[in-house]
Image (tube, rainbow, N blue to C red):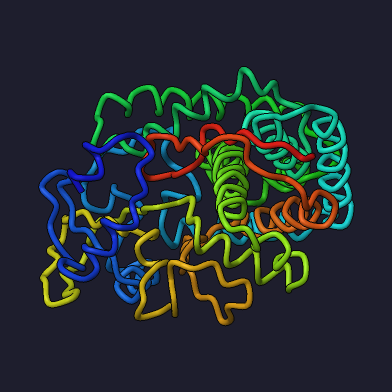
Length: 379
């Protein structure tokens, strides 16, 4: 892992992942102070086993700051109640209206950008579309992107605090700031969307107020960052392959998006704490040991995916771990894939001449990988 950290920001991690899978698929990293898993089978087994492996580090005696406690970080049985509550909230949303809202936003923004000689696909398209989509999903007023962008990035940087500890404090403060915004939403709730449902049913939910606020914060942040980085990484991958967009336009769009999720893997890593001593790959993982799953490596595991380094829009089944697995699988995966289908489908059908006018510049983040700049032209 030190090789990846010391390299230039945004370096392609997959050559290193390939070597780790082949030579050290389960190993202890002194740099991370954690066991590191790279195989699909091993990562899947840990993700599914919430009894032996904790997302909630309080289960091994760690002190977890209140802004960190959300649907993403609490375990069953506490997690079960809040997940069922949020699943009901998602089901209550008018998904047809949401789809139409996303499509109108995508069409309008592409029409405006098409009048330019070129633009940055990240700042001018993907980020505003992702923020507009998640606020429509939540049912809340628009959020100023210039204010939100650095707050969100502080949280992303904090995901790498195991390597850069100085990133932890700003990330906790940024999470608390967005949780305060969630409280404001519930104080004056909208009539619809996820927040409208939560406000109307909170009293009987049995969910603590801090966890509920942090969960709304987590939905906002993941809907912007994870889903947005899927758009930027996906577009970079599509533009790097001359035949990718025509193939996508002619094929099964739903399968194509799942393949883009696998190939890009915006969430490159996820962590757990071992609660019950377990053996993985011949190694004993002791209670209290941290475990890091390199999902980006698992999603290119040749023992699970034929020709893993190729985009194959017909790949089926496609058991990627891009949205996790088990109790903590991504609650917003349907929103992320809906947005991606609309964006990539619209571009492939209506703007087949889109092309890069410069190289993609990747962010230096390791846990949540994404593109910082991607200059393109529609003409």
